[in-house]
Each structure stands twice: as C-alpha cells, then as structure tokens.
Image (cartoon, rainbow, N blue to C red; front, side, top):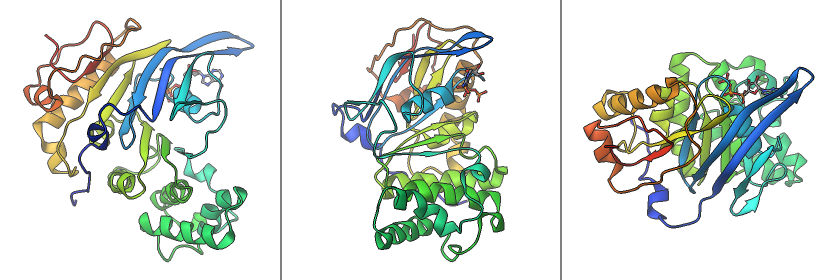
Length: 309
Ligand SMILES: Nc1ncnc2c1ncn2[C@@H]1O[C@H](COP(=O)(O)OP(=O)(O)OP(=O)(O)O)[C@@H](O)[C@H]1O
C-alpha cells in the first residue's frame, strides 16, 4: 500500500487562530414515550481549520448525536455549537455530511453523476458549474468513467466513494462523517481511509469523523476526542503526532501508533464518566509523549499533549 500525502498539521501553523468549530457544554436528553434518556451530558471540544478529528467512545456514548448537532440536524438540550464563531441553529452553510449507509443515501434511479449534482442543483448552482464540480469530485475519488452508471452497478466501496464525491462537490469547509467506512470490507476500508487523507488538503477541508474503529481514528486523525459512557463528557483529547505521510504499513507498524491505539482503547473501555472539566495543559511535544508511551489515565478530561505524571 502506498504512502499517503498528509501534510504537516495545518492547525499548528495557525496556532492561536480561533477554532473553526467550537462545541461548548453540549448536552442532549432524548424524550420518548418511555421516558427521558440523558445521552450527552457535557461535551466541550474545539476543532481547528484543516484538522482531522475523530470522535470515539463506548457504544451509546452519543457520538452520532453529537455529529447530528454539529450538522444542525438536531437541537441540543443545553450548550451550543459555533462554526467560525456563528452559532449553529440549522444546517450550516459549507458543511457536508457522509453517512455510513451509502445504499440509503444514494438515489438508485439516478446515475452516479445525477446523484453528485443533485444537491448542487437544489442549491441553484448553475448546471454547467454543477457538472464541472461533480466531475472533478468524481475524478478525485477515482470514479472517472463511472458517471453514467447507476449506484447498483457499483461495489459498496465505489458507492461510498460516490457519497464522498457528492460531499466534495459541495466544496465544504467542514466535512462530517458518521462511520463512513463501516459498511465495507477491510481492504476497501483502508483504501477509503487513504482516499480521504489527501482530500482534506486538495479541498482545504476540516474533517470530523465518528468511528468505532480505534485503529482508523488514530490512523486518520490529528486528534482523537474520546467520549465517556453516557451521559457523556470528553474523557480525553488524544494528540496524534504521527509523522506524515501516513501509510497503512509503516504508520501502523510504528511503535508510537501501537501506544496511541492502546491508550485510546483503554480510555474507551474505561468504566464510568469523568468530571466535566477540561485540562488543556500544553507543555510537552506530543511526539515525545507518544514516543515514551508514558501515559497515565487521567482522573479528569485531559488534552493529552504531555505525559501525565
Ligand atoms: N431519536 C432518538 N430518540 C431517543 N433516543 C435516542 C435517539 N437517538 C439516539 N438515542 C439514544 O441516545 C443514545 C446515544 O445514541 P447515539 O447513536 O448518539 O450513540 P453512539 O455513541 O453513536 O452509539 P453507537 O456507538 O452504538 O453507534 C443511545 O442510547 C440511543 O438509543
């Protein structure tokens, strides 16, 4: 498998810049005929422009709920989401979403090209421009020549590429993905991971993705936000200072990858919810923390840029 372009962490170059995305004290209680359920308790984190951030956590921790609030599809019970300083109170401009279930998100009666251009046409993008943007997006996900096919004529991985192309054609500044590669086989999953890394640079995007796959979270991300059990809070934000370019072979054989994976897995499996504070201590280079493997499980949410002693 070839190495993938993954330029130096862009957010570091812009240190001190306000975050693109700010999630502040987010809470969500679902009310059903059976009663109420506190899914998300108090979630706070930032995402800087150009970052890839994964959200992981135990099943039911509210990962999808948080993503739906970010996308403006769901109102929080408390807290708020800001994108470029503007509160989200409905689907925000410049934000695209890719779901796990490509078979339900693509329209079977439309061609590949029709699926990719549809949202653009709905947004009144002129026909020629919509076609040009769609063709470019399809080319960037390796689907040149497939424009006239129907989704059912494509493999699962190719259908998910169409869904990704549809999001790219929208030219989002923020791409949200909910378990985007969960419905494909392991090899295709790796291919799709490697597809996404250079796209963030090519399209100048910031990416927030929800995944159950800890390897995938570490492999793709600049930082991993770990949610605790419900009602969830941020248990830790783990910095992933692995070298670029990332590669399915060399990155995953790197001992630092193994230690980060171990660390995130421990956090996800840790029982109980932590206190609702965030320590943003930033005293040591994250690469050193990963290199030494000298991590301690924090008693409270921690941005892990330094070994905890
Ligand atoms: N529309 C809804 N109405 C009522 N409860 C809901 C609704 N959506 C989600 N929930 C509940 O909220 C909790 C969090 O759900 P959510 O899907 O956000 O978690 P998750 O971390 O993404 O889960 P998983 O890892 O299993 O995919 C779950 O207990 C779920 O049953």
